Length: 452
Image 1 (cartoon, helix red, strand yellow):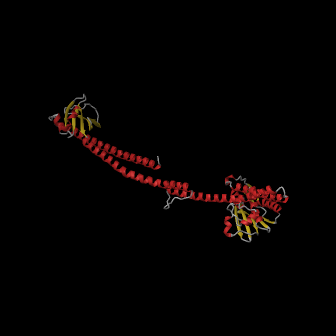
Image 2 (image 1 turned 30 degrees about the horizontal axis):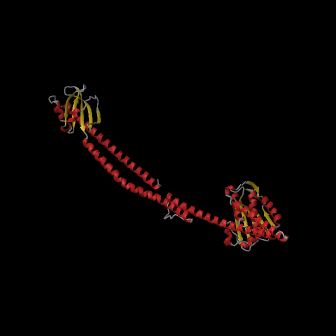
Image 3 (image 1 turned 45 degrees about the vertical axis):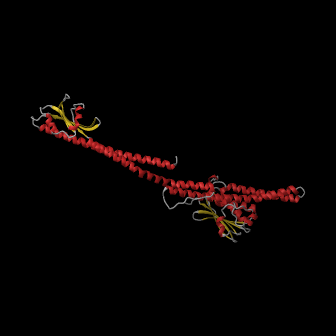
């Protein structure tokens, strides 16, 4: 069953049942009130009759006495303890009441009875009869007028229920349309996306705080996120394919060259092997960086410990200086303590140092200092720098400021994105300040151990 049908069915049944319960309660309450009122009236009439009997003269016959008090639609009778009727008077149209069973109750009774399908109010009270005999005055009063009123009320309530059902059903239909319309729009939009392959949004006419608006707004946000990720994925795949295509083409070309002339020309053989080896190393490095970038943040195995930042950077600078034969000037404060993963921090530091090494030829300056809340590592080079318009893009994968320059230097456009992921994993921050043609300053910011 469709959701619209379920809403219509369940809500209609609920409202109709609610109307029936309310109208039924009204009818039962009014019926009970009317019957109670008739019993009170009958009791008052019986008490009046009893008083009249006590005050009547002895010369008045019993039937004559009762006839003065008999209700116009009922019966009065005097019943002795042995169940005999001393006197009985019945209204002309209520003669059938004489045939009902006679019972002596011996106490006050007020109740509603039914005889031959007709409802009566029955009242029984003790009396002293004219001869001083203890007896019981029983009044039976026809409640047909009251029943007619209750029947009219019942009919009116049934008609009200039927008439009220029409606007209820219309309201429920409007309500279901209001609820289902955004969901239907969502379904249609998703089907269009499935058919066309394009990311579409649900039109939202106005701001609202209800859940249906939030559903559409969340869907549109999700589409924005999916489209952004899809574009990034396409760009990533395109760039990765482009980057892998070049070394594979070089390897293929040199392999074919070796196949044709490698056995006869030793110089060509050495050149080809060196080129294939170089491109293979390039592919391995790029693949490793791609695999690291593909990790989610929670999959980084981070081991946080308290370390001396000054000592770690000093050891790293010495290793880098010996490995790359570069002049590196280190300026550091003696006691800078941080909590971080030393291996990940060293990897992050090497990435930024490699960039400074690749894109500058003069000496590199490394400064370890503190500010009010952070430990700061500055890597300063006097290289070619980065244009200001492209400074924010350098953390995008495969983005390179100068294709020819980075191809020559061996860059893939993956180092800074990897550095950013590592920094996020260890709770560090990277900042770049650069002036084209003058150099670049890379900063790593870490929380001090005693900072708040």
